[in-house]
Length: 341
Image (cartoon, rainbow, N blue to C red; front, side, top):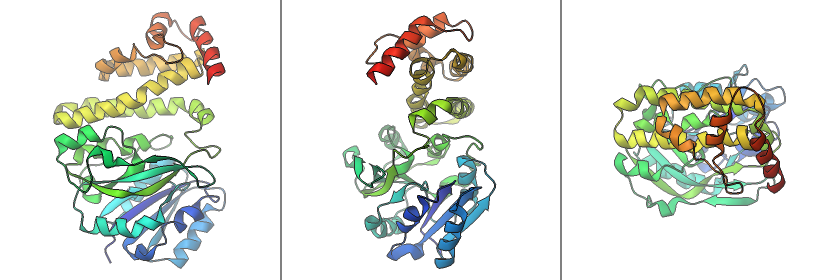
């Protein structure tokens, strides 16, 4: 039986969250869903939990057990195995809004758009909604749009909101970076250049958990992994530079916007949130890559300023940088930031 939706569930040491994640998918139309749990070499009970679900629902839940290779490797293996009409990623510590899944599957069954957008919410550990993202105001309600219009609307969308038609990946040779975190940025990058039409399902599907210890969006974790973020962004910059001349203007502008959305956070972490001189050499290498592949962004970054401390800290750092040495004003800025944040 052909599946309508393939759901890739990357899982590493998720024994606490995986049952809630998979339980949220056990709806009437589970027969039309292909759940692909990718166990990334977990050291806890994740594998056993996944095997239990597979044994109970062998026609709808599949398991890929592999050595640890980090998030991107799970997406790559899941993509190779996916057979559904549409593909969506669901992180193992998140869940779906089960009350809306049956309607979602019915929508996808008749939909032919390359990309389907749906609403999502951010929830805390207690399952309480802390923020909602409703895209009705984007004027995409129950309509399909051509590429020249959707690129203007999709600038602020995140991976939680989207499902790709599987044919988007045909001949694309898409692989997500392996061995590092923060590669979810890539899910919203190259594949979008193959999207021509977009449709909107006007209900909440994704429930995004924010606040668990060790989560990659946790401030302490993201600071430690800033080098991984730079690594992924460098790959995106190099890819953008390689393909931009072959892209129509809307696609090129979209890729530029995705990079420009994320790059400033790297400078904020290195120069303000941490302001540690040991980070400066790596940031300088990253800065040179931005300058080479995206000169317009390089110039605009020079005028990055924080609302609480209104001065051009990137421009100042470029002027004062002379190796892995402290820069007094940035150290002071970091102290002020810590007090005010």
